[in-house]
Image (cartoon, rainbow over all chains, first blue to last red; front, side, top):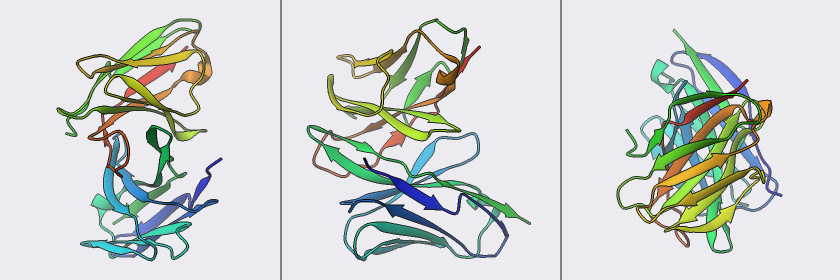
Length: 113
Length: 115
């Protein structure tokens, strides 16, 4: 079945440093979404990527979808303490009459002052 | 605030018992999803309902069942509970059941502890 791995599992950075998390799928994806979960919170939608090679930016966050649509990345420039949390990639899968998100393993980001 | 509500926030029970978790989706959303989050399994999809009908199933145990009612709220029933069922259970909702890549809005979760 679908397997989605994210690396690294954990990342500690100093405030102001950059951060990147990578998401790799064993199969070609039609769509991938990214979510952020703050400590003690629930996943919150960040972005959705659909096209091969797509790049989308949200302020300091840059999202990429690989050319082969089997991998994706999230890059944060100049991290801030508000960026703390776990970042999940989540391929959106159509299954017969329904759909589901298959969450990656997540990357936990800690930002130190 | 996502607009998705879940009750209760915390639930502590014993092995062998049965519990019901409740979810109210965002106003107007027809799809409800249930997810289980645990340290060893991560965030796993359990089941999707769309306008009262089951539409997609994940790795949901036979001891677990769900339903969506005419007012679109949903309940997840967990029976014959085991220690390993201790986890955070999230409900999410979205606006469409199929065909569109809709974002999902997650509720605050119910933390289940089985002793």
